[in-house]
Length: 347
Image (cartoon, rainbow, N blue to C red; front, side, top):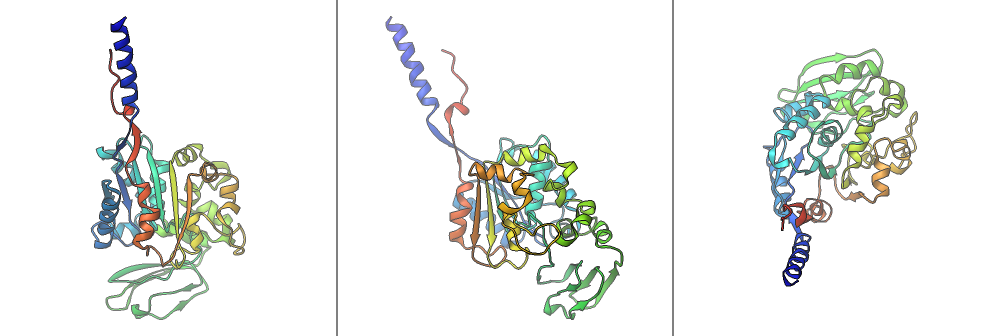
């Protein structure tokens, strides 16, 4: 009798012990934006800041050679490279979190939605991501060698490039060097916007998320990346992509109030224009992507797993206080019961 009582007491004690909350370390990876690379001081410092503030191990995942490939490698290929790299990283095998900047968000989402047999992503923090596309060419500063995409009737180039504003009645692709302010080459595309997009998408990454709201038919027929990742084509909606996206524990969408790179800035929240018109600007909850739940954004929101965050400042200019408030909590070690980590003892 005494022996039986001691055994029962031991079982109760061990059961309580197993379910004491503990913390497990969850690493994170960062995807940088276009014309950047992991070795740049700003990126590496940001990763270190996030690691220090969250006490979680973090690293920047590079695609190809970084800056150049962020411009010239098609987004489908970038997502594929990210997929293979993540599956080879042993420290991510039990799951991880993602922080992504600007265009890096579309690579991150390709990884989440397209990558087969990959470790799970728990929390995903998006900083200024063009999730619903861009409708205009952003204002960009240029350095030694840059590529600017001209798919609109007016191309704006940086004042220090030595080139005047150019106007044309047709879309075009324009290469220029800032070293001597002389064009390397100019290629005019006189056919439809769709034909231009088809040509550009194999060479210029941002062309994969250009979405002209008044030209939706051609966009859906010819754009290779954004319609796929957003499940926009009615006859091609992939439930696996939706399932993987809705498996996120938390989705943090940060929009910069002074953003002049992601146009419209509300694209960072999945807000955009209605099909066939350039007005009004729809909130994310008013878009078909949300109301018809194409990728599971509505499902996540209903479960209170989406955080729509607006911060002051220009594109990717985020104050440390806002980092602490809106980013760090989703990178900190995750609670777990010890029963998840310890094997059951046989008495």
